[in-house]
Image (cartoon, rainbow, N blue to C red; front, top):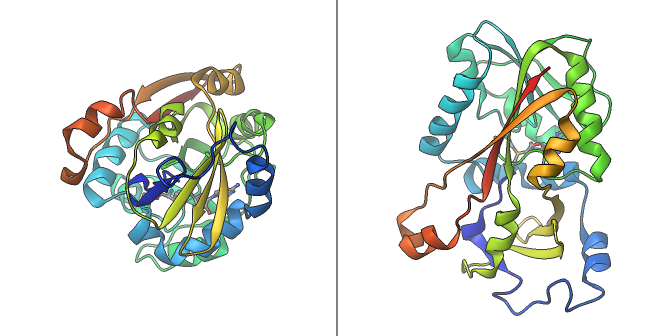
Length: 268
Ligand SMILES: C[S@@+](CC[C@H](N)C(=O)[O-])C[C@H]1O[C@@H](n2cnc3c(N)ncnc32)[C@H](O)[C@@H]1O
């Protein structure tokens, strides 16, 4: 999930302690954190309203993603499909998508779509429930891979995705960059969520309306490249922010470099 910064208080802005100032913060936040599945179950009802990309941004990003995927018809695995924002774009182009998600509540929303697709409930940090060479493309959009449990998880996923894809497959991810974490020194103002930094590459995100928290882990560019090689070549491009008018010009300058990346991985 790419978190809605504009809805968030930051720890700094609200006078909370940051790592280095409170030796107990990390352990306490870890205890408070629910699993990713429980978190997404808890926010599923509000996801499209409070977390999803708006329609213009969604269209803009999907145009880029569709331009990078192998040409249709092709089998595309949508990891963390959520309520299925990407599905109409894929179907309109002639792709055959399969959605995977660990959250039952998210899958229930997705199953209500006018044009249903095969949906699978599974945890993508575990072995994937697919035959070898089943897919030509993989999507993991809007920060879906931001909640890995440990450094080895990305490597294991990259092996599993190489197994279930065909030679020449493309795997696209949209992930928060380390600059996203650094941007929390800026006061965004309101109070539906709180972000507490728990390490140089990690934070806890609390949705105060759902009373649920989730751990966010933000690998560096080298971490991504290291985890995905030798099975994938990796290109990383910035996703340029599309700022709402309320954020103003100063913020546009303040949040450089890009707070989100698009990872373009091609199966060797
Ligand atoms: C931020 S949402 C993205 C939804 C949709 N792809 C989009 O772009 O709007 C992340 C989704 O990934 C799912 N997810 C997170 N961790 C997962 C895991 N380990 N296994 C399967 N699904 C997971 C969540 O339940 C959630 O639906």
